[in-house]
Amino acid sequence: MFTIKRQICLIYSITALGSLQFAGSCWAALLAARGFSLTQIGLAEAVFHLTSLLFEVPSGVIADVFGRKRCMIASQCMSAMASVAMMLSGSIGGVCIAMALSALGYNFASGAREALAYESLKQCGQQSAYERFAVNDTTIWRIGTALSTLCTGAALWIGPRAAYGVD
Image (cartoon, rainbow, N blue to C red; front, side, top):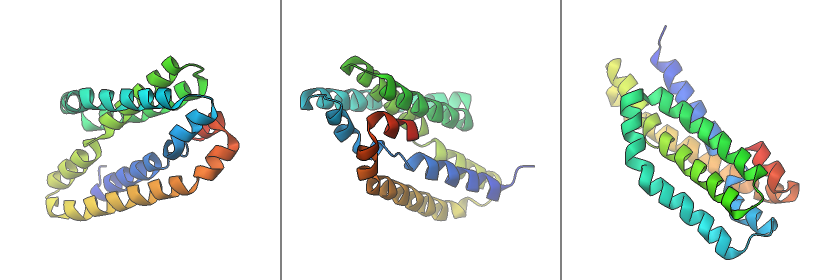
């Protein structure tokens, strides 16, 4: 049986796990450690942002058509594929594919969690609780990214491939 508290707790869990990107906080340093030049690292970042720009609206349409939950699952799958692609890539081409997958993972998650939470709360007649959800969700995200940043030294110490393996 659907309960709103369970749904919100699951969304919080996804936020917490999604924010803990061990290698994500220091990906540029990890690429530099692998021997990529600053120009190549800049190209990889450009691919991320261009992909994100091009797919922000289409990912929202996909979420509307296929559902928020499916979109969130697709996001997690793309993020996992991005980590695997980054681990296995030996060239800038592979890194750019990994960055594009990472951007798609970001885009598919962007707004889907919030929309799912709002729609679920509205369905139960509790849409006034959305502001509290948004504050809690953002707080969880910020704490997770801060913890990831604190782990930058460990990620660099264990090496790029292992760091992406943890992700």
